[in-house]
Image 1 (cartoon, one colour):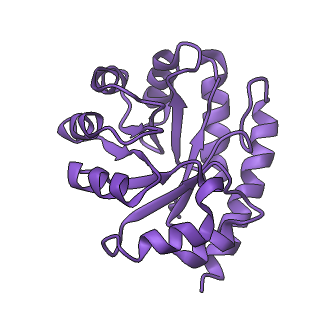
Image 2 (cartoon, one colour):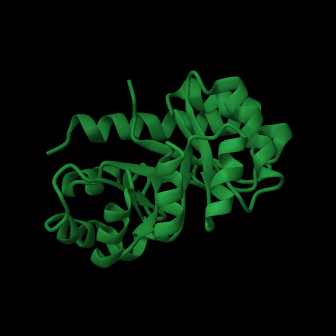
Length: 204
């Protein structure tokens, strides 16, 4: 079963990357990003992609410049997530046949991202827009637009977001904080996956 969940491993180091990624995949989370402001992120991405690219989509978050997209591709990553909507980053990502999830907040940013080729939209910080704000924006977006709530979406409110049309979620500190063990991440991932599955089953 493929779930629209993206694990955000901000602050992970290369020596933690493989055991934590393995636990996430076994729990059922198969899209995983390492933000580029983590320690030696490309080394982590390279190791993760080499070990798990047949079972998960591995990539980078906090991608702000086109040249960073090239670095992630060279490391074997196929997923680019950003906190902002930068058409140059989106176009570079798509030119490299990678998945693009830029950060958006307003209708203008949403349409700019989609016109530039984005695969999905990352609403960040979701806590400021809320499900009612997303519902209003979805009324004008093309049907089928993939929208991910990030920052303020979690097991306690997945169903609220899904009811208004959110396609998925990015989960950061609720899954991983620097210093978390692989076992701790697995326990959190199991809880998040169970809540996501329950929310999607009761959709509508």
